Length: 68
Image 1 (cartoon, rainbow, N blue to C red):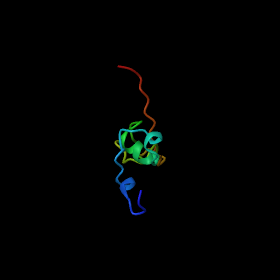
Image 2 (image 1 turned 180 degrees about the horizontal axis):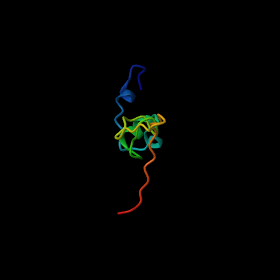
Image 3 (image 1 turned 30 degrees about the vertical axis):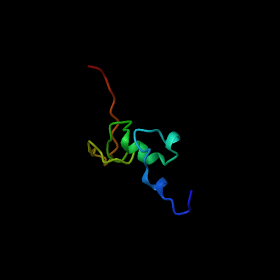
Image 4 (image 1 turned 45 degrees about the horizontal axis):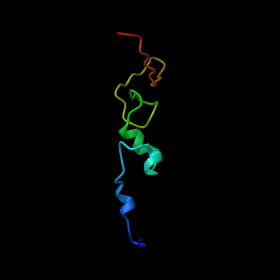
């Protein structure tokens, strides 16, 4: 491989491959494979799908599944 071979920057093995397979950072994997319903000010770094502010000023949301 030549020193000016930059194919590794193309990220050809990006989502849905797991970071252990493509030896890349985990943030790009988490952005493409959501693990939770994103609220604001908590969880991963995606923009929140719901934004709530309590009377005390708290903005973290903990949603629990009860049933259907």
